[in-house]
Image 1: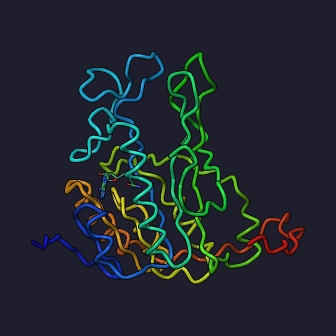
Image 2: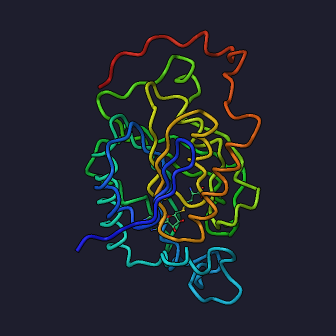
Image 3: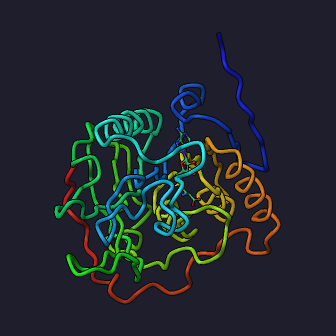
Length: 274
Ligand SMILES: C[S@@+](CC[C@H](N)C(=O)[O-])C[C@H]1O[C@@H](n2cnc3c(N)ncnc32)[C@H](O)[C@@H]1O
């Protein structure tokens, strides 16, 4: 029996409510995917070793305490990894140029846990460090984490727009999102915006874990087509509202920077490493 899904079209953005694994195969190909999946924080021991993000814990975990509503964010780790590998493979299959996948390493039971244990099944080209400049897990067992990763999985057709895009470097300093979007874990608009505007011929962008629609807002600002998928209706509605608001903003299109950093003059053609 076929399932039907709610779909909203706002300008050049198409927003789907439902499970991305079911909806993705119904869509046509996109150029680039930029996304941040749930991190499976539900059962992570926290700074005091007593289950900081444990669902239902009374005074720990703050806004992450109850996961993402429909998605509890507390799968057995192996199940989570297998699910995310499947998601990644599907996103890669439907993306003509590249997938940008935001995740983060964390210290768990005294050891580092790297996203999906570096086992992706698709070619990882680069890890961009997102330096958030601030962190919350201050404790005596490890230095406080201030960075996340944006992992770039690229296809042979992938290219950056120009040398100044490459000169942006692989450490991106953007503060976390401080505006209250109503979502517990939004990334800042500047993060997807930096990635999307750097890729040549990135006209249609997908975010299958859209949350509050931040990637969509970046697409509106850049004048790109956007397809977003979100499973939780509360966040889906927030995404619709934010994208409508973005279309009403006066800075509808972001103009290119007027001056280029001096260091870019030194950038030379790199040998083709593909
Ligand atoms: C880390 S959040 C994304 C936040 C987003 N980048 C933003 O700026 O608001 C991950 C989102 O994935 C959603 N999600 C979880 N499982 C999903 C699924 N199977 N299909 C689609 N969305 C899902 C969660 O509800 C959550 O909103």
